[in-house]
Image (tube, rainbow, N blue to C red):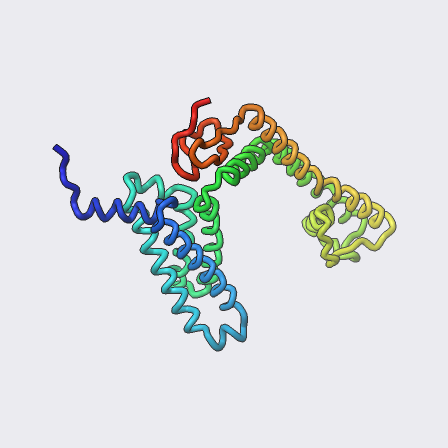
Length: 279
């Protein structure tokens, strides 16, 4: 004999379907409203920094921001109470972003300048990938994540080399150029080296002596290589990841709607929900 569900349990289930059910009509509608409010909130924050608009419409913009913040707060609390393991959501990637999206406005009560931090709400657009729920996009994002993780150690070694190079170059430029050319200290020389190696080139400090200019030319040439190396490392790992996945992936075709699923582990069609044939 099954126990009748309480009104609270029924309420939780309905809320869960709306908030987490991306394949339901209500869930889709809520996701679209949520994305619209996130976009509106980001636009409001940007407009509030425009001096002319801020002077004329600051109060109206602030009221709109608070309305959106209250909506996000209610949504955050409902997400917590609607699932069996609330802490799993609270400490998840999306849970932390959702919390960061509402904190700045409450902090602005005590520290007014912090309301500008509400721009972090733009991070909530990561939910777009979850909402779209397209296997090809999910597959590509997984490959990119795998490539970044695979190249992590190589990139760290490369950054270590760049930092050491910047220290040495900065010290040399301080010795060669001196305070007369703007190299007032070794840290100032390191700053110049980093700016030059990354090909940013602000021009606030520049060498004046022939030897200094020769060293600067070598640093500029090194800069092009420095830009290419991390890109090459990640690209190589991404290619390896693609080869590994292509080697083991098979296409499953849904017998009902003829949609193709590119995952060995897929059991049901992502379009119509029909059970897929076993390989």
